[in-house]
Image (tube, rainbow, N blue to C red):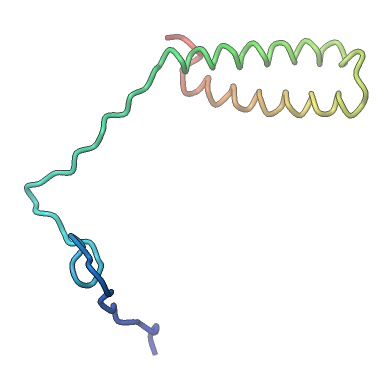
Length: 101
């Protein structure tokens, strides 16, 4: 006993280039699909990296001082935010090789 298999039924209506069954017809081998080039602004990546680094440093100084002037819930939220940002920074440092261009 194997799996129950269903037959592909032809769909109704005008199917265009997909053919009668509605499945995509294979392209000719000589025709390559054109892909748009991926345009990236690397300077924006490094600017985000620097901004992230700055925010981690600011929160680290707050943590070092003991979150002075904050309630317990605020301090806990800042500590969690710092933990998340440190993780993101570690990933970006690995990606950018320490932030150097």
